[in-house]
Image (cartoon, rainbow, N blue to C red; front, side, top):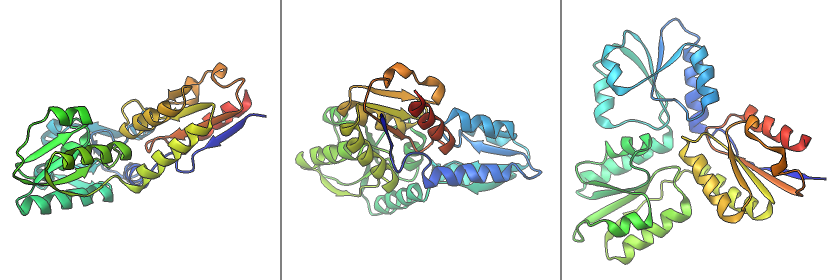
Length: 281
């Protein structure tokens, strides 16, 4: 009989669940509800919210919005944007993840001390763009060892290193070691959140054991893509899907153990549908 193992921490993290709940609760009222960017990187959840009248807006659209509820998603926003919102006729509900808020405070405090900030993460990710907006004038981002090797920043300056909350924990440590080995004076704060770290550790252990790994997530989800990368390094038969509709039974038909994990933006019902499908064939 085939063994199907689902990672204990698969699915919504605290920050995402809180943000989605805020949007759902707000949709029950009489005011229009907006989210500043997609509240979660998951098409199924976004469709549900859209059906309830929740509208995704961009920063450029804010000034033209009438009175309504604006939800700041878990990724957070810059200091300048948070100040801008005070002048608009919107009831702001801040769903920024507490772990991200903590990074905002860390970089702001260290920048105030004259330190320059290095953020390990994807510079195009909304969370990282928000962190940059609290880090003062001197802020750098680095997304890989190779990228760091090509960077040229002054040696005679003190730096504070933080991380995107969903960055690969192992790669973060390697990049930091590389920076230190080059003689930079740094204070390092590992700001990868516990939920991310738990998911990545479980993914490593499970993918070393399983014959096939299924990673559930949205292509736009940073943490889901990192889970896929971790699993693929250890299990050649690793597949990235969004819903049970993306499964192919031949992937796991004649194997003994199938592992399942899911990114922090994947709702529980999708995970359960995938489990049922994998067990059925």
